[in-house]
Image (cartoon, rainbow over all chains, first blue to last red; front, side):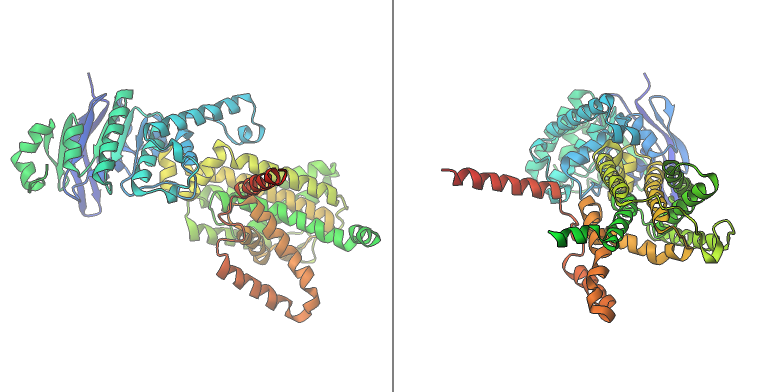
Length: 255
Length: 298
């Protein structure tokens, strides 16, 4: 069976800088795959290519056997890939509920006419979006703060809101870009439980993370990047013991 | 009692209030473009003028009923809005501002040099069709429409584009398409405003729709609070009526007007009602009133 997401020989060049050099990897359906590596290894760049923020210089991205290389972000989200951002891109002046409702956007179709007339189909759609948003907020335990403005949330809550917003688009594949960054150990525990909840719904998770404890306890497989190249791939226990990985990244006592 | 009736039926005051209504319609259009979608438009008055001239010419040459001229004005402006928007809305921030500014000037110069619009001597002979009731009916309709749009999936997409375009794109929103749609609605409304203006003043001159007017409309929206409909209403009312109230200070009028603007910038840089959720505030006041009434009954 072919993988849900396949990256074939991806190379990304920004002028003279080679950010990613011929990386191939696969994400299988229902699994949690982590992408790790030192800062500047090209992890977020890979994410940006998968979600269409910019196309790769060469190589292909296949999702459910369909070539989505170079498609626009909104087309890719429509196909069932959602993501969170490393540097939190929330709609700061909107409420928590509105942020998540915008996540539902791609699963609705009401336009200007629907906005002005609000015929029954539109009202049903709005109710559906409200329900979906509340469900997504429940998964991340933010339902109680739905009226709060996004900019007034704590860092950990903002990251959870990003996840809720991504979940609201009903994705098949969820890309998490450093979801535990800036969280204290307690918040990380909560986050791990949330990721398990998401996984139980059946969503495949592809994540980038620096916290080794988080990665090793959550992932089915780990891919390691260093200077744009894949240097290891396999189950967490194997990767942890790989000499190259230790040399490049896990240099000191971590776990 | 008689004084009030005198004031209400004074043709000068009625004219002023009608003008405020017409300005408010144009401002609401710009509110959708700049306040909700976050796109700078420094040429809004050009779309008002396109609507004005289009509807005036339809009335004069085609002798169609006023309702159709009104619509023609709106559609002409919206058509030009989409035409301009298609290439320009790919630009960001300042560059879009410059482009819309340029467009405003182009329209003004084109109208000055066209024979059919009367050229430099202006367009005369437009019949009087606008009255204060029609204008405020359309004002109420426009406000209703704007609220409906703001609280819909479409409106949320526009605010998402304003807040963070890249994140919006990742949520499945095609920014260019939505910006063009917002621009189309905003310029349609501007065109309606222009049509009403033409059939009230009964005379049009391109100089009335230059950058100064665009900037004035932008001031209405910004002063009131970007993204707030009550703000736009308040901003338009204050800035349109202030010169009237300040007439008594004669030569110092513009000085005081400027001083007011600077005071605003210091104390309320987000606009008078910027960042204020009027519905929330009103609900809070109502709840407090109810508590006070309930406790005083004992």
